[in-house]
Image (cartoon, rainbow, N blue to C red):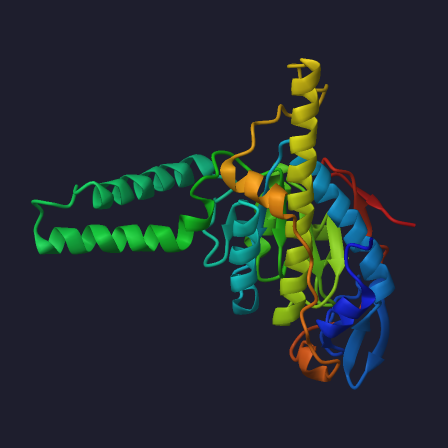
Length: 304
């Protein structure tokens, strides 16, 4: 069964690129044609790249890894939080704080502070304080929750990063590349394919497009969790405690994971019309250099 269908991509407006006057020439190989001043992305290529990204994410999670979902633009915020939450993966959908990856030790201290404030609030730690003190502590907690709530349970750098709009999230992409963390991302016609390890050519501005592709990545993570569970169960039955060489040891699944496995997951079709409403009204457009391909360790190669 296909990960996603051509009809789903069309209905969600994934094929609409940016205006022809604004584009990145490196994206030329992903562009099918131009219509009414808008570049049209080749969805046949998109389907192939989706399969490749899906397999990478599935294998990453199956081997004990995690995927950080990043999308702070309004069109992506809801989908990022919903889909990442569905598979219990960390996410950032408000503002990317510089150093979230490259200076994670400092960020981790702020996460501990957030948990401390939440504990104080729940256990009566605010009692005996003045109204002003309580107000200041509450504001601090709310601010930390807004910016760091999605990564509250992230104890180390992720194994991969899913990004909606690499231009807007250029700081996050830069930090991931600096640390050698593979970047999986929607690649619109104004993007630089050299910055992405596992690109998915498509529209990163339309709500339905961003939601559909984010759902695909979440489903890949869910499939990875199921594979991880199956491998863990097989080892337990055989009495094998040692993990495979080069593979992270698997932790037991939590309750939410058991529920997920019991219910399964499907990628649904987001109903959108085929009209130009899904097009990027304000973005760049085509390219000529070969698209990069990558290995799972983040190293890049040039596709023929």
